[in-house]
Image 1 (cartoon, rainbow over the protein chains, first blue to last red):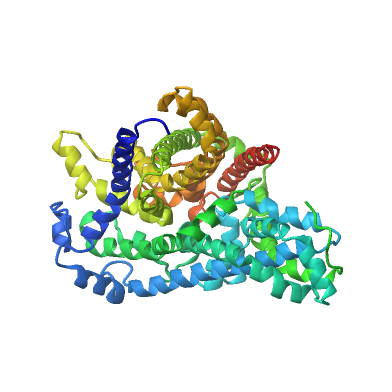
Image 2 (image 1 turned 120 degrees about the horizontal axis):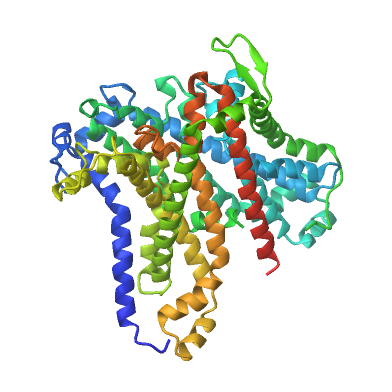
Length: 282
Length: 293
């Protein structure tokens, strides 16, 4: 570049720093609230620095729970969220790897029909068909179960499309070579396709784990028992309309705990996260 | 598009496809068809008898001001969220694209809000702007602004928009940054040598070259506003005050909750379904165009 870049660079630092601070501020404030006591917050006198109640608040939230409506220790909610997120992520990878393998490596009647049947589900977000789906799950007897939380959400076109697209880039010569070596469909899948797909699998896992952990409307409808609550639902129930009854310090502690796992996943696996996000939209 | 080397057989592919197809049929197509069917039915108050009424539910929907209000809210909401989150993200991405030292650290610090659940984002913003204890509400009042989103519909909408924008910036930032980094540096250098100043370079070269990304993000953001913001609205306002923040999706939920108006709710679902299909079709055309580049 031929220009003097100093001014522009300073401007860039300034704008980026402001951006980072604005994005971080709500979370910082939530963290601060999780280290004060209820009275300080309710008065609207909460300082902008952490207080002395960190250990107490986190201990009470995790292992005892709020006094109000939910009562459930948040550690249990986190376990529910974790099971749900893992089931959705792994389930989705499992069924979509299989279906993509069939669509790409086999020629059979109705192949394109099957593909379109899966592809069209891109257009059916759960919010659109929420009550009929609820009814189906209720009829099967999946209310208040992990299956009910996860199974309806694991079928969607994104995974299948992602793997299909990746399989198409695997050179045909590899399959021909495997065939000459006498490998059948299972060995080719296990020894060639799966090892090559590991990055795609990991990237999809990161995205789907976040997706599963953050689910709101679906668990809100199909869980009625406190013991089946996920953490994202739990926090909503802690905040009661009458402000005075809300134990804000515990609700904010729960919010921090609810953000921690998915945010950690994004930061620690940034490369995979970016790959998963960008690939999914190709 | 098709592999030349494949395996033979029907049973194995059928078994491989079975899990996905079974789940898709049971939890996607069956409920979706139920929604269409229900939208033609009316149930009496006790749920004892149902009657097939053709388009009565739709007619009733479009005769109520409620539905137009939700439509209007959705329009306002998506316009505001999309334009703010896209422009802020573009500004940040252009700055990060200057390859200044530490820009990767900035990238990390800008993308994490993607991982925050919409419902949690709602709780965060509600806490900041809660009229009785929120720190921002206190600030607004101290400068003499009468802030109460629990009573004032426009303020409630503003709050929901802020939370939704806050959460969407990271996603848009990531795609804009990727788009910017794909623009060949030689093009920009050539313009610089020709004497084009940074602003001019941006509007005449970078922005037009970025338009496929922008268009793609536009569609994705509209879909985000329609569906993924449910959690934000539910935790911040619950659609209130007096339905000022009730969007189309939120109305499907609140009308159908407790089986109050299943037919009407189903009719709304079907209309939403139609909107999603249109949006997907637009996106699909974009993908096709990108391929022919």
